[in-house]
Amino acid sequence: MPNSKRTLRLLVALQDLDLMIREAHDPEASGEEKNLGFSLKNLETLQTARAKLAEQIGPRWLSLYERISKRYGRAVVPVEGRVCLGCFVTLPTSMAPKKLEDSEIQLCENCGRILYWL
Image (cartoon, rainbow, N blue to C red; front, side, top):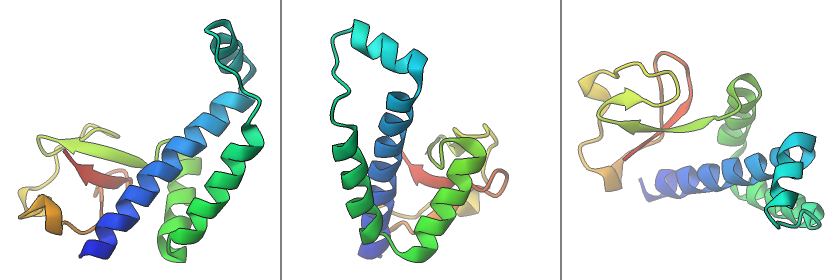
């Protein structure tokens, strides 16, 4: 389904924005970024971009993403060599997509994270 591929891309982008926002709120991480010369003045811009991106994701996937994100921090993780890189459990062969272009969004059977295949 092309729609599931788009949703997965949106979820990955949402996770990236969430991680940037979390780092901006973390005094230790933001201090390190300031020492490296990065400015954290545009936090409102990140939050606005996050809200716009979240509107494009279906309520089912957004709710699932937010629930997993609260539990683990990273809700969307890659699969490499049939191994979920969130919990490091080998996934069954039946979960591997026939073609990466046609893959549907899948969840890890062990940890429940949203998976994308490398």
